Length: 451
Image 1 (cartoon, rainbow, N blue to C red):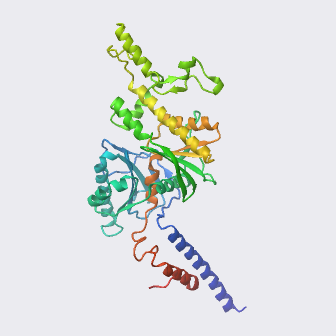
Image 2 (cartoon, one colour):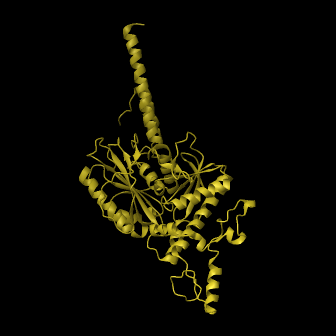
Image 3 (spheres, one colour):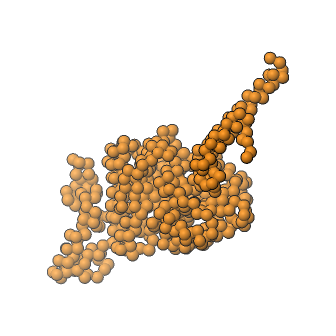
């Protein structure tokens, strides 16, 4: 072989390899049009730094997450905001650059609004839009909102008319799975398990991620069997979810916010209203593995105590459950006790149904997400205990530090190019042959032909 022919062969080999790499990238872009290329190298959850600056001040019905996700190596412009608008809460995820940081990276920010304050949420997005335009110009990389959840449809016209930007709607279940997969595989110290000895034991990413069951607890509860990155099926759920707790607690206590209700539960003692196994047996029911503190009947003491109070009033004894309140023939039950009882009731119910679905579909790994959990220790403890108890330790419950933002993060990652699926796009049904020809030209010439 002459030197010139050897050089020619080597050049052809390099060109073929380069062409193959280019073709692979293009095929991947066409197969995954919605993927946003976020550089997650070195990503970590910010635990102690003050959160990034927000364009609005704190207000009732607004909850800032303190655990932003730092992306030290992502320096590109991100021209969209993601919103997951549910029946009770609207969750937002948005990216901010940190130009003063040494690495010049940025972070994902998390905030939620009570849905009845959707106008405040829209005002927040409007101010983010204005900041984006000041930083990047109004014509370059125009901001858009990627929305999911029922509110993406209910508030679509309101969002579009008020903000005067594109609103891209994404399917809710797909966003949930995309978001959870991202957290499981890309963010260190995001997923954890719970036990009395170690309330937050971080779980390492497993090579065998699938299958798993996602139990998403929002206003209601959906249970989704996930067999692969795009293979999922809603297998069940329950209408007794976070909205149930919020609604009943509003009737019983008048507590103004969900966090106030959880704080009440922390201070409560459910034995003040619940009938326990010990109230019936006077001890543990060891034969079937029930402790005396196990709940036999939620709110099961209320009727008996109320009747006793009324009878005491008739007899002139004035029996009340709370001696600090005047005797009027009605047993006065602590708001804190009722809150804890109701929290246990809903969490136990969800945990048992989740176990039954996992057992039915032969799934060992169960992930709990949704804004009902809110990082609340009693909720996590109850769900974890339910899975461990019913499965006899054979199944594992997992939790997330950003459990309420699965859908919003999924929507953030699924943004599609502006013309995708429209005329002249690669997905246009009228142009499949041109795509084939483009690949053929890349294979033959190492580059696509211009048209």
